[in-house]
Image (cartoon, rainbow, N blue to C red):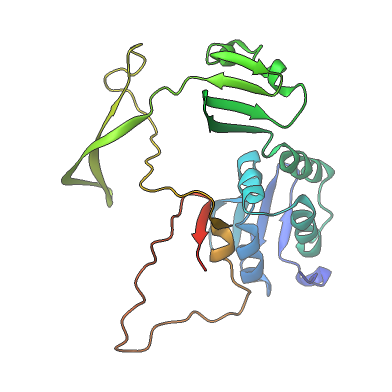
Length: 242
């Protein structure tokens, strides 16, 4: 990505990990599109948009294939002032931590694995984590309980609209033998509608990004829109077919 001249650079990177983007700057669109790949938009008033770099936003960027060098090169090229050293350290450290812990399904159940030697033994000593461990296989694998994995039994087609948000009631059955799920409790559910193995996939962020100045294509008048494909997609990746 080409650097802007110092007097027209669009970004101000601050030590509290916020990034200010000037709306009227010549590089606004380019900076906004790339910045959204690794920072969270907090405020967007008329003249300056405020983004924040967080561990989660950096991990999402790493999942999309971004490297610490690419992120820091972008910030240096477009920041009016030097990038604070603590921000550079945080970006590199959070990129390094991405993928150290993974939940995997194996023959012996759901296991938590680590690529960092010594990390899991220290982690399972934490009282809040220790109670979730079924057994320790070795220093890099521990077995965790597959609790609260259920099945969708019913989607009630009676929508409720609150503040322009439409919701549907979904009934899910799950093993609750230990009575850890209580009436009225709020829970976050990830519903899997389809899955495939051994497929080529690309990060969703790669499909959303386009170079600055690229016109938006529209279907010619009278031409029907291309139907949606049946490729499997989740929060991070989309399947690619030949």
